[in-house]
Amino acid sequence: MERDDQLMKSLINKLSIGVVIADQQGQLLFTNQTIKEMTGYTEAEIRTMEDWYKKAYPDPESRKKAKKFFQYDIENDIQDRTYKITTAAGKYKYFNFRYSQLDDGKMLFEIIDISHRIKQKQELKNQKIIFENLFTNSLEGIVLLDSEFRILDANNKFEEIFEISKSDIKEEFALDAVSLYEEPENIEREINAILEKEDWENEVRFKVNNKIKYCNVHIFSVDNKEHDRLIYVAVDDITESKEREKELKEVKERLELAVSGANIGIWDWNVEEENIHFNENWAKMLGYELSELENNLNTWLNLVHPDDKEQALKDLENHLEGKTEKYYNEHRLKTKSGSWKWIRDIGKVTERDEAGNAIRIVGVHIDIDREKRAAAEIEYLSNHDELTGLYNRRYFNEELKRLSNSRKYPISIIVGDMNGLKDINDNYGHSMGDRYIKRTAEAIKSSVRTEDVVARIGGDEFAIILPETDYSKADDIVDRILKRIEEDNKIEELPVPLTIALGFETTDCSNQKHSVKNIRKCYNKADEKMYEQKFAGRC
Picture 1: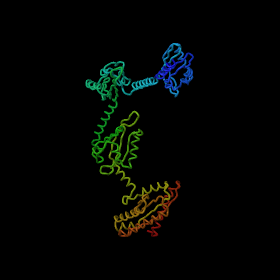
Picture 2: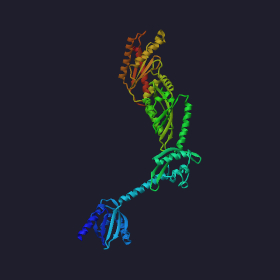
Picture 3: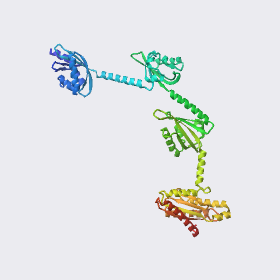
Picture 4: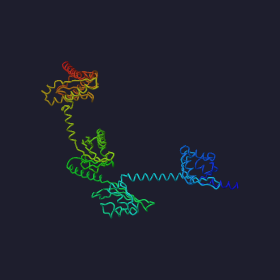
């Protein structure tokens, strides 16, 4: 008999379900090995029902509820219930308890771990919730069809696009529920092919209350338990973008017609697709054929003058970000011949996405090279002496004022006056006089630094501003000028030697309150010293 009991226990221990036998007093008389494997609790840890409750339900409230349910099941002969318990590892598991009473009054519990099944059920529930949310709130119109193309369900967006109620079209044949602008037979023939391949996608026009709507339609099918095959139809209303595209095309055509006879280049940049289309004038303006230019941003970037690129990109970025009403920049572009041409570049974003990001920007190139060069020439002539190329008196006086408020002290000023220019003009003519003036300008210019300001301030008068130059250095520069003139006299034969009287003075006062007065005083003092030198014969 004892041998038979041992054999029975051995067989029960090998079962895949947990087995527990308890008496009426709550003593656990037997727990098989599977219980330990499922819960992690040993037979020694759970000798009584109270031990089990404490281990499986460490939270007092949960323990109280579990006891209440168990007592209710015993009293009402409920033999099957699912409990959520805590394992020895601290994890939750779901067990199905099946209760039965043996002939001798003992209680038998068969326990099955259904955690995996519960988890799968929850995952399916979550997936269903996610699908229902996506279906209901999708930005695309979605309609579900059976294998006969009858409507099973439709979402809110579908109702909005087609201006119909799904309750009015349920179980209708899909192509009867909506009105196609195309030939229905053609569409039906194409859609029927869905049953033989994975999916179908195309642009379709519909008639909705006497209006044409453009939609991207994507259809695919899947096997389904309830139906032989379930067909999903996703509809994206692109009518607005189509109308904008049509309007932009018309505007572009009118613009191209308007500028076809003018020297205006047109560019059209699709920011999302990273391509730019140029017209013929854009290319010809730079000496290219349109076929020689690639349709991308680098084509333009590679042609922009290095000194102009940073500001051009900054102005473009500001407009793309919506900080300016339009993009405007003037910069130089490299022509096919290698020369630089000034361009006025104007553009405007014509399309943005819902987040405000630029999608498309259209603009024009205007050739302003002559205008720029004329302006530069006028600017040059307004500041320079035409005969020598040196700065003129106007620029000299402006620089005196500017440097008086600078930190370039000490500042030295040299004033020079050519000797005998009137006699040269009278005896040899003004052409010879101009030759002497140019020679003097060259001698002075070659003896000073590039940052020094050299000006012809009168017929035979010159002046030099030397920033950050002390008295000793100014004296060296005077000597250098005189030496250069002396050397030139040896090289080039002139009717009479070229001579000049030079005087200089230095101011090191950086007091802003008195600087204008002092720098002007410095100039006057240099002028006085020049006359002293002239009469003293240092020339």
